[in-house]
Length: 334
Image (tube, rainbow, N blue to C red; front, side, top):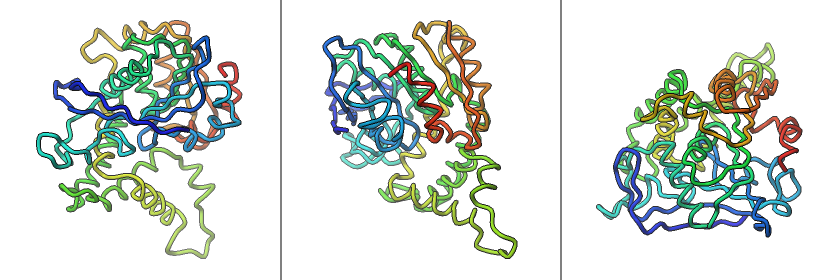
């Protein structure tokens, strides 16, 4: 995929009224727009992913995969707040000429969607053949569709929700508390590393399941210390901290909590009823973070939407792992 950055010259107003000056939106593209302009696939990424969808959704997206650059024009934009090229807490605040750090404004999923719309306008996109996203990406896809400025022919939502649950918010708050407990989480670029490691280990417990830990991390009967599960948790935390930062993680977890399609509207049901796209909603049977009941609710209130549940032991991460099932389910949209 090819990396690009769009620099928006006008002030970008957030949902809370604050302004970001000199907004930068990083994005990747692959393939070419066909003459009919009906081959655009727009991917919305999850919490700590980047805009190179070939990197993190390989097996579904790639040179020779179901969604490929020979047949499609693929776009994925890095969300504001993330440290993969878009404006984020480590960007320079023009008011202080120093990084924002903890002063970075609170952003919402709707703010992310509005940034996607800016990019769509910049690229001259008025119709999207397929808009797809899982988890935080699915939240974005819903808000992006509801802006009703780009025609979305097909909408695919995976392991996501229309309003973030108290359970999900509690998981995120525990992670933020771990970051805030790290005394280095102040105005320094590399601050909060140990807190972020702890936060990621908490997150892993919401992404996976008892069954998969029992299958993959179980020790033999001779072990009394240095358990596989302990090493796995530390490995996951250290892997994230080597590519992400605590400031962006803290910011994006707050954005996830903000998801509520009923905010300043009549109801969730009426908001979802406004969507006219051909909609497919996919849930993961063992997902405890975004349980299938949340996807069923979305499908029940978008006119003519279809719900499919994938039986998986991988929990929330099933939407990234169950590639054979996803290829079979989505092949009619390629």
